Amino acid sequence: MASWLPERLLQKRENPRRTSFLELFFDLAFIFALTRLSRALVDDTSITGGFQVLVLLAALWWVWFVTAWSADWFDPRAPLIVVLLLWVMFGGLLMAAAVPTAFDSHAGLFAGAYVAIHLGRGALLIPALRGHPLQLRSLRVAIWFAISGVLWVVGALVVPAREALWALALVLEYSLARLRWPFPWLGRSSWPDLQVNGEHLSERYQQIFIIALGELILFSGIAYSGSGMNRGSTVAFALAFVTAVALARLYLVPAGTRLGASIVAAGPPGSKLALLAGYLHVVMIAGVLATSVAMELTIEDPDYRDTGHLAVGVIGPALFLTARILLSAVVDASVPWARLVGVPAIILLGSATMRLPQLANSAVVAGVLLLIVVVDGMPGVWRAVRPGGATDAPDQRRHG
Image 1 (cartoon, rainbow, N blue to C red):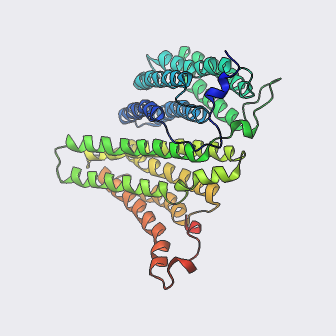
Image 2: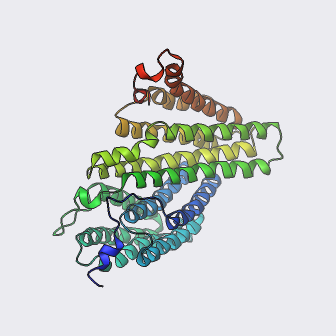
Image 3: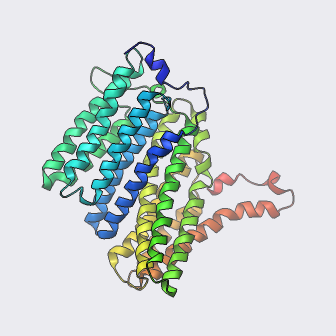
């Protein structure tokens, strides 16, 4: 490789960075993945089924996250980066296609595609970055993915240990990223080596969260269309829409729009915040996915009573709210009290409806989410009607 190649691949860090068409095209693989994950959870809402879906989601998210982080450093117009993104996209599609039987007959396809994605990324970037300090960063990451890849392959071959080995591999990979990929004799990456464009990565997080919400709306609509559109299904469909709107509002306001600025303001250490936001986003997406499945099942049969289905409808919103509270805490150093109260409210009130039809459970959850949105918005309304407007109002960030 020519010594000038790294400079042609890398973005200038001071330049504004917008999401490219290729990155959005790459996200199509994640859309397909979410549809497969939701189908898997619909088919099995047991504890085992939920855990398996969570493992698969964590793996698919890690593919998306590492790729988004890497792409932040490189020019998406460079031919090598185009090849890289298409390679990861195809591997992600293979993983997504294998999701329904990833813990059965197609474990090898899922694990093999996952390992090939990460090792292929290193095989492309390490030679291309020859002579550049970032080559060492890519080398450390590739070595660790090769090591964790052993767990993925062995897990695919050894059925009794599959869940444990894959979960262990994910814990290892997520932890190593926070530790900056240390390796004997090679050291560890510095935070400047891992620095990202905060506004760009924040925009990518928002885009992928909107995709998750789109999955909720899509499958709610499909379920309603095939339900006969009776009164119970219509009410359930309306509750699904209210829930989607509430989740969108709770995500965006306020810290959802300030994450990028916070990462930028922190400088190189802002990479820690960007990484933590990545961890929290996978939890929020898991919550939206579970909520989507619960709403779909409610629309299909509003009067059905099933503890597993109802538990999914409670756990999903609770997961989302918990992660969203933590995001507010790290971005704004605030604890939004309405959301803090909302988590136990959803768990307690949702649990109280376990013996009732699914429609009652969905109504309670949607009602609590809507109430949180209203309480969240009250300080802004109060400032608007006060004499003097916002000039003498307290800082809204205290209200989350």
